Image 1 (cartoon, rainbow, N blue to C red):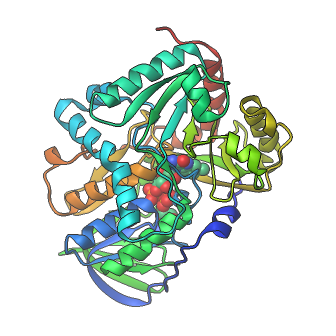
Image 2 (cartoon, rainbow, N blue to C red; image 1 turned 120 degrees about the vertical axis):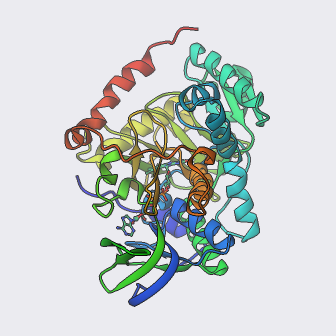
Length: 429
Ligand SMILES: Cc1cc2nc3c(=O)[nH]c(=O)nc-3n(C[C@H](O)[C@H](O)[C@H](O)COP(=O)(O)OP(=O)(O)OC[C@H]3O[C@@H](n4cnc5c(N)ncnc54)[C@H](O)[C@@H]3O)c2cc1C
């Protein structure tokens, strides 16, 4: 499958720039981080702020992975698991720690933006989840109640209130998390790299980690033109994982997701759509999602069961979907098209890996990792600093490659057909 292009729109809008030289020759650090996305940078920043000498290697450029290509929605929740489901899956003690981390993850992100003056069009106007059927509206009410019960700024919106927030009466209700919002993710990731560098993290772009060698007191990481000796290693390569950490790439299914953006909308139209400037993603599995950029374009996206000719095939699909919600967009064009790769796990829960000899990694954002990556950066810092497994906010698990990974990988997108059927059916309750 051809690699999806990067985002020319985020590049055009970004006022944060970043550039770092490749690693040349030998270097030493307490910790080497592999992967220059939000999670790797958040881990590096947290480690450096804890006084740990940290060096980060990025194969391409900062934000080249999902971090610089995503929809920019800051959402401090998981896609599938509400708080009660998290507690059921993880147990009371661990579940509580994980939920506290997740709940604070958007604060971490917006606090970091404020602290380092990251210029990334950050808007903390809330995130809304419109419900596409009355049954999903009842589910949204329960979801909002669970989060509100934990002190999150969450509220149920009936159909009238949702219509006012959305600028469309197409939905049956939904809920709103006032702690969410949106950013230009490429600018944010670059700003995070600048912040990490400012704190003393050494960053090298165009420095793919090619080989790990275990040594008496740690590891040596080889790149094409250099090598780093370190005590511990944090590997955060997400859906872009290669064979560096054998087996890691096979613990997730990398799924391609595409993004589209309109031209600048006429002022009257832009003012009617999402008048409060929230980010929105609905209750479908094959979800509809959108927010406005600072100049008034609508940034949306979608997925395809078969990837061929995505650039030609997806725009009419997204146009029809948006037109059903906002009739004024019925004939709109999408001059911007890009895509990225999401790391999916089979149970839709994230994974933390930790080996006795000092290898640590996180993967499995399942499409909602912008805020979560900030929280997981601190969890990985804790793991590096020796916090016991039982006390971490996510239980470390053994690398468990997905059986028949090649086949699952090739056919995963076909599950979309099943999800679309489920989206069309009403749910009980
Ligand atoms: C199209 C799309 C839309 C999304 N929308 C949203 C959204 O609106 N909200 C949300 O919360 N989440 C969203 N997500 C998910 C979110 O983008 C990710 O969870 C998050 O960016 C993951 O960050 P990361 O640092 O873990 O991984 P990445 O950003 O993917 O970074 C991994 C990095 O590792 C590097 N790498 C790989 N191998 C090596 C190596 N051997 N040596 C050195 N470097 C290496 C890669 O080059 C890459 O830069 C979306 C994702 C996609 C793809």
